[in-house]
Length: 101
Image (cartoon, rainbow, N blue to C red; front, top):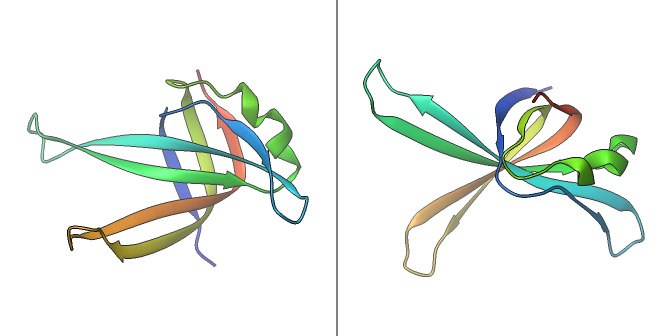
């Protein structure tokens, strides 16, 4: 089993949604900054977060800019953009998460 721990800033407010089959879930996204080799060069990675367990109910309290911790199963999705560029999305299916402030 794979587990990923992400620490970063929420890039948008958390939202609670309902799936087509009537199940509730929540989503938000997180940006993680990485400083490369002690230089001032910075790289930012973005992660989509989906919450299907009972903790989805409090996800709407997440506000853009909150410092959050998310732990869960990662899933990558690779695709080609309309311009033919290789792109990828990383989604974390959260088993645990919280706002760290």
